Length: 323
Image 1 (cartoon, rainbow, N blue to C red):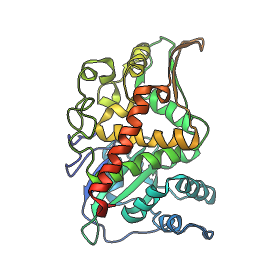
Image 2: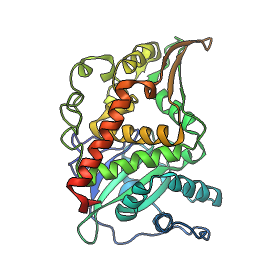
Image 3: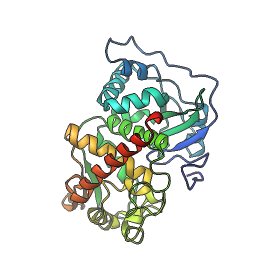
Image 4: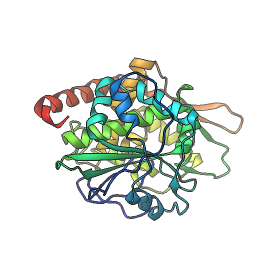
């Protein structure tokens, strides 16, 4: 993994398992892929469709520098265009409106050797306003959310002969809807400057990346998402038991205050609007459940859903011109 900026306000960051904010100068122009003819419908969706195009050169460079030497622009098929349009339509109206104002381009990339899923890159638009590129690995277009998250959690561990495995159950809906919800929340967060100094959750975060006690001293602070080495699979029960006792909706939410905020709002939407479940299981070598965690049923997590939504509402009210 390439060097990581310690703060989202820095000009450069590094590709990670979820998203990256990367500042750069505006490009000379946006080259657009040629989509099939659009059906008549929502004007915002049509405007967003027109933003889909090849990734920025700096985005490709970030993937290559993170180890994905084979990264290249993905050419979308008609079926993939349909999947993307469906995922955009699933976004809340407010999210689509934010993207209509703030999205410079939405790109898909072939990067089979990359461990990163998505990258959000910020640049200065023609009028000085922050604009964003969202780039997503194209392979997620064929994955259900359950499959995507199971594979993502597997990256936290190294085989050790224990026979343990981790399974995530999150329904059969496309992973793309979740990813767009998560990445668009990063755009909102950055535009409104919600989590830059640690965000609204001071009992959980001492600053943007620093966990507050007792979480900073617990097992939950020691995962790849916290930039620690992979854990042996034999330690997976301990890690997920720690998640069960914490107010995070996922282990990925422990990466930073920004990821926590994005996970909270994404899962609030998925669970309340679509009824999407979320269960993390550790299974032994016979497939018998050792640990089961369902964060969406946690009172602490549900309380933080509403706190995150309130923080967003307050930030919007304080700076209505920014979105």
